[in-house]
Length: 420
Image 1 (cartoon, rainbow, N blue to C red):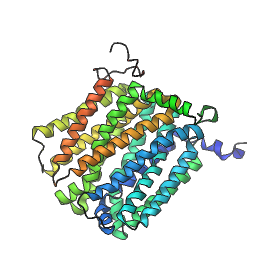
Image 2 (spheres, helix red, strand yellow):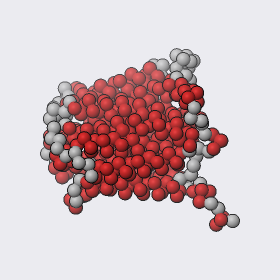
Image 3 (cartoon, rainbow, N blue to C red):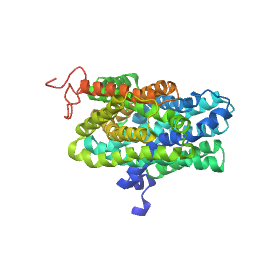
Image 4 (cartoon, rainbow, N blue to C red):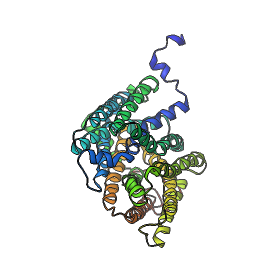
């Protein structure tokens, strides 16, 4: 009888380790789409006729804005039609946009292809979070997200080196060809092994009334709104670094071919943090771990401020600052995301869309603003980190009624928890 079971049934037997790995791969597609081409940004911009010193950052920003724009559609569609069909469409769009980037005739066409590529990438990112929320809640969700992020963070560690290797054997269009192949691999794996977690009886109609009700629930849930706003600020610091990392390490510090290795070593701090979080969150809880990490992020920024935000700190000092802040980020991100999603189990798609759209769009805009201020020094970036961290801290403090390190009821904004 087991041998006659339909493929859909057999896919539900996916083991926890494979499930986490597949979720991580879906989430990591965005990181791969950004980090693999960092080493090629000058070549792409020059080859397509854009020689402005900061124009190359638009290749990252266009992708992130497309990524943000796709997220409001993905969640409601996956709530209505199921997770797997929406995931498949998104991966196909991503793959086709990758091919368009290979043959882009100019810089404007490249930016358009990148925006569409990001739009398609919204599906695996949002669907992955919604699937995890379908199957887990609270600390369980934070634990799964931490394990997924351990795999996910490997991508920023190795992607620049992969991009460098591709450039050694070919040219920059090959990078987009590699992204096309990655999308095809993810689509095949998900189609064969990923279970459908949005069952027919739970699917929501795509009516204005249903969507409006779900949206009102999301935007009036205090915990969801507060931690989504805070994540926008934190992502701004991450994206400001990613957008200008190539300029900082190659143009300012002259690392040349060593850039991918330094970038990867710093990114490894987030991988270490994800491992730490997976062990700590079950014992200490999401609030304690993430709030302590946010204070740690602020402390690192304060140390930089004490020295007057130097324009050209020693490379080891800058690397230590970045490793410390991104270690804290690795403890913050999965927990803030899980806390934002925790009250929204019945509308996980809409919730994931809202949290993903805002945090990504805000992060892209904040990161673009800081990146465009690049003046040949690291000062704009370190000041930007500090301002965004302070704003995130104030937002969390407001969300928690002025008291950190303890859980609160995730009630609507109009109905604050007792004792506020």
